[in-house]
Image (tube, rainbow, N blue to C red; front, top):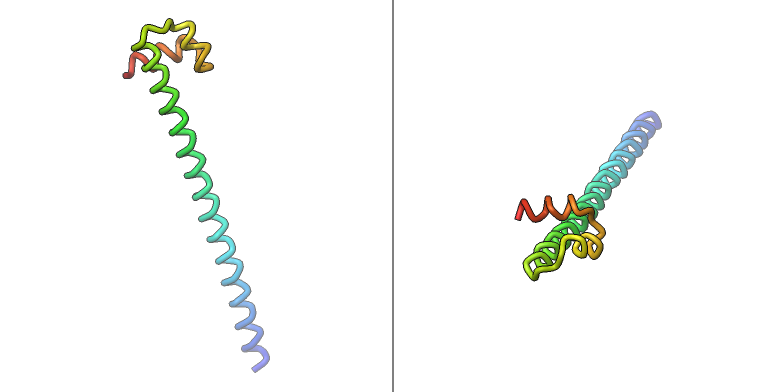
Length: 81
């Protein structure tokens, strides 16, 4: 009987550790997803700003300085619009 309760305890401890691991993985995936979404949103807004400035006649040099991008990066954004 005592042996059975030890087995049950070991099994429950194992299940508890497994659940902690699953929750940790889920939390990590969630946090990475949030971080990735924020990064994509920032990049999208930056692209929109570059295109808007360009459409208003702002020079590539000023766009580059205002967006903290190189002129080459600005040109790449404008090519892909």
